[in-house]
Length: 159
Image (tube, rainbow, N blue to C red; front, side, top):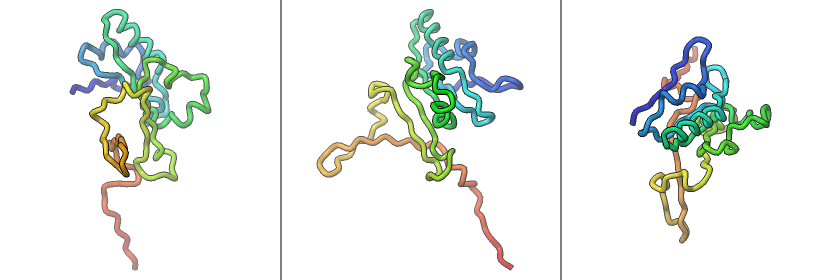
């Protein structure tokens, strides 16, 4: 898999619709847009990126899905900007993740991902177990450590 990034530069910290076409081709499996940048809290133009992908599909036939990384903005955008269309109201959005651990009072690393529908989640990612006589499907992702874990051992000294 080859990752392609829109690199930040002074004064431009988000993915814009005009950035998309140069980064996608027949091997692209999806585009991820961010709702709440870690750097400054800005939102990518989700609806505009979706429209750019619609135009690419019209010209090339490539049907590229859109994932929204709403790790920071997913809990605030619906309340502060209720008319902002960034979620499943945008037809090309197939999945959204949000991170509870960014708001405190939850376990480090706690977050969720939701899909528009079952067809957007590959069955190979679901683990099935038989628990008390019935199928219990489970899907778990682990991709980051919580901010409370520094990777360094902390020691205290008393005098």
